[in-house]
Every structure is written in C-alpha cells, then in structure tokens.
Image 1 (cartoon, one colour):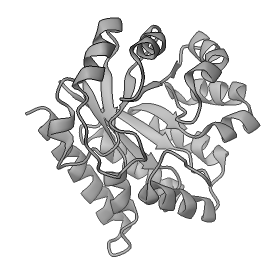
Image 2: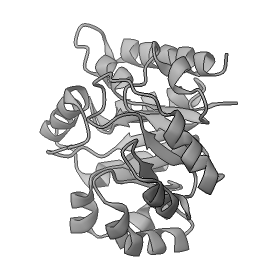
Image 3: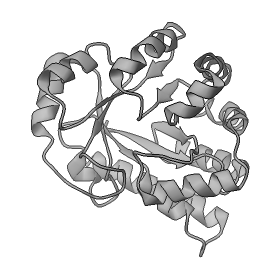
Length: 246
C-alpha cells in the first residue's frame, strides 16, 4: 500500500479548524500529517503555501498553538512538524523535542537545514525516539546520496525537482531513485508538484507521495465555508490515495 503524506498550514483560518481538518484527514486515508509551522520566509514553498503562512501569522499564530493543537491531533494520526530552522533555533530544539514527546508527534521536517548542519540536532532528536526527515534532490551526487541515506529514518523526502513547492515541474527521477535504493531500504516519498493529476505518475518506483499545495489551495478558497473546505480537502485526499494505489 502506497502512503499519502498531507501538509496543512497550522492556524489558518484558526487552530480549531486545523484540528478538525487533521482529524478528518486521518479518516480519509492520510497516513502521515505534516503540520506546517507558519513562518514569514518559507523559502522552499511556493506562493500558495507562502500566502497561507502569512495569513496564519496575521491571525496571531504562535508556536504554542502548534503544541496545543498537536496534543489533540497526534493521538489519531502519525504527525510530523514541518518548519524552517529559525523557530527551532530561537525557541530551542530541546523544547521542540520535549513538546513532541508530550503530544505524541513523531518527528520534524526542516527543509532549510542542510544535512551537515543537521547532524548534531539529528543525534539528539533520534536519541529521544523521534525522526528528522532527510531530503534528497535530483541534483545530488551519488556520494552525497550515500552519505545522506546511510542513517535515514521513517522515510526519505525525495524532492521531485529543483525549485519551490507547487510549481508543477516534471523531470525523471528513475536514476536518483535507483541510487537511493542502492544504499537504503528506507521508504522513499516524493514531494513537490504532487496533486490529483500527477500523483499516479509521481508514485511510480517509490513508496508514497507528499501533497501540500493542492490542499492549501482549498484552504485559501474564500468562496466556500470552513466546513466545505474540510469536506473538499478530505475528498481530495481520498482521491489521491486511491490513485496512488491503482
């Protein structure tokens, strides 16, 4: 069974909505939830997720809201916190580790923390039974792929193309997937540019897909109510889960 990871922006339009949506996604076939931590400069994300980040911050999002929401979400679905390194650094990685353990969150995704700089934190994170997800890009050399995947846990985040999320680019990943398989048995999930139209193709040769912008576009749709957003996002999750397993 191929896996589906869903990214949503925490706190938009509000924290109660985030909890309700997360629990609905848990019932809709989503295997892992990325709770996005709003940040003012989300460098790896495209305009859709960037806008949701901005709106959440304007609505008063604080890190403690993430912690509080996770206590209601993580018991029902495998949950990861996805955020940029600045908040982890300023609040303290030890606090994030402790709060994750308290709520049942299973690890972190930090896209702007290079592998080499992540190593000291990775040691502490894994010593506490959590995972720090490793990224592989199509531009990585074989030696770098071997280095990064040697101790990869939970899953390897394979970036589908060089660029930002949601831009819909496409390039062959066959070679990089083969190289990863040479060095690691850790599941490979493809992210960036995955939606209901591309998921079936993107999942070929890998173990799952990561979907973000396709869900967040619905979050930003001001023409429908919050309850309609939850129904529409959950329906889309079911559709993608079915397509990747056809």
